[in-house]
Structures are given as structure tokens and as C-alpha cells.
Image 1: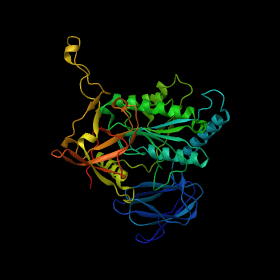
Image 2: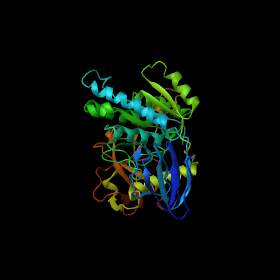
Image 3: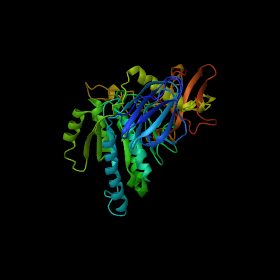
Image 4: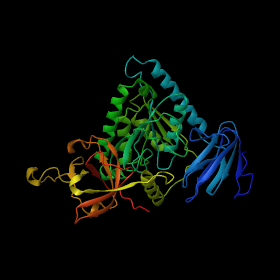
Length: 432
């Protein structure tokens, strides 16, 4: 058995981990926790801990420090939970990685032959809320990077957002193991703004954006053999029933996923196996979820969303200074996607009800209603390109002066907005 702390709380606590065990830690809400590897080797979600150096983990983070061969770990600071577990699913996770690695090698060696055989694995990770999907994605990506691959990470989880703020779907190439503190590095992420944190608001728009993202990635892959062979790892929402299940099938289809990893749900696994049995090239694999996964209630999830938005403007360690800017109403055009009937009643067959068009672009009059909303800045050159364009970033509306027709917003960097087209959804944030 792995032992518990070797010294009293308040000073540095040392944990001696036996091989293939992990130290699970939840950092307190207010102060960071320092972690140091004293002996052996250990990793956080697939990324090696440097020996002897203190690593500062920000508040509210939940992490598992795993060792393959044994390690001594020291913690310093306040944590809400810390315990050693010697039963983990890591061996099965690394076995999956080994199979994926073999497929990448095969894809690379068959470059120049047909399109299918030169395509590396397209892995989609599915499972209910809080089953450890994001952590598994991080591990698979980091392990692939260690082998020299540059896989693409696709995040379809609009509720939390691993790549950027909630309310978006996004993709980014991962070129090095993901830093335990900094998270996913953002060179040039592809981001599409859905604008809501649940797909029920406009499921059709969600599907359209998923297709748009997949199309863009296909174009990139066709011109980049290296990315193509490295493949992709796709994170999904935790809603796996009803509409959530339908959107899951849509994502598997749209991205041509060939490996479906199901975390901790027998029923979902058998449903997917049944529905995908006509596709012999798709493997559905059930994996155990990690015992360290923490179930979060709605309030905690909302708080996490709020912190993600705050982090976008202020940085993870509060080390960025966002810029407050003022523009005239006439300098920007705000649009909402979806809503409004498609055709007037007079143009419809008798008895037919007008149906809201889920992808209709509606110009929004600037009013106090935009206060405390997060808007996306579109790369579109014309309004009709808004749906098919990815976004440059986000602004947060802090004041609206109706008399002077001026809007004050917060942006992560100074200078003019890259575009005058802004998209509004229902994403609110109360700074504080």
C-alpha cells in the first residue's frame, strides 16, 4: 500500500507513492498549492513533473499525480482533499495510447497512398458529466506529443470549454505535453462562437458549427500530412441522453471518428456499439473512469464557467491587465444567430405555423440589454459570412451610454477590434 503524509499539515507534507499509484489533490478555493517531486518520476495528466522544482498549482484545480515506477511527492499549502489511490485506470489508458500510436505510425508510413490509410486515429471521448473526459483527452494528447506527434485537440464541450471560454467549439494543434498549470497552449486556435452553454437553446446552430469546424480541419489535414497522421482527440459534452445523444452521434459522423472511448457508462457503450455496428472501421471501447473524478453540482459548474471567462481577460494567475475601450454604436454591428420567424404568416400554407430559423442572422439594436454579456468578435468581412467564420476573440460589455451612443467594453489586449462584426448569445458574466 502507498503511504499517507509523512509530516504534519502546515509544513511540507511528503507522500511516498508505490508504483502505478496516484496522489489525488483538490486545491483550496483561495490560495495556490505547491507541489514538488523529491524522488522517482511522476506525471500530471500525462505531463512529467520536473524533479526538485516547486510547481505552483492555482486555486480550485483538481489533479492526480501518477507514478509508473514509484515517487516521493511533497505538498506545501492548503488543499481541500489529498489522498493516495493505488487503484487507477491508468494502465488501460496507456494501452489505448499504445494502440493509437501504432495507428499513427501506420498512417505516416502510408503517406502518398490512399487518403484513408494516411489518416491517423480520430478519437472521440464520450461519457456523462464529470466522468474525466477532459483529463483523459489531456493524457492522450500529452503522451502523443512525447512520441513526437502533433495531434489536433477538438473541444465540443460548450458547457465548460478547455481551449477557450464556454459557449464555443474549438480546435488547436497540440505540439508539446500540456502544462499542468498553464493548460492548453493557444497558438492559433480555431474558435466558433455558439454563444450559449447548453445546446437546447439552438441545437441546429450547434450542428452547423460542428460541421463548419470539421470542414475547416479537413482542409488543413489535406494540406498537412504530419497533422493528418497525428489525427485528433475530440472532447464532448457530458449530456449523453436525448438531444445530447443525438449530438454525440452527429459529432462521431461529422468528424469521421474511428475510435470512440466511452468513460464509465455501460448503457451508453452498448447503445453506441449497437448503432455503430454497421461501421466495422469504428472501434467502441469502454474504459473505467478515474476514481478521483469529482461530481460537481450546477452551482459549482456555473462558478467554474465564470472563472474560465475571468481567466480569459485576467490570466490564470491574475497576471494580465485587460483594456477598457469605448466605441460609438455606429462603429460596430451586433448580430444574433437564430430566432425570428423564417417567413411571414401570409407567405405560409394555411394552418402552418412560422418556424424560427436556427441559422438566421438578426441585427441587434444596441441597448442596455447587452450589459454584462460576452460578445465574440467575428473574422467575417461581410454579415453573411458570420456563421461560417471563426472568431478572433471576445469582449465584455461593461457600460452602455444610450444618450451619447457609446459602448464601453473590456478586451484582453489594447488596440482596435479586428472586425466591426460582433456576435451576441446568452453568455453573461458578472465580474467580481
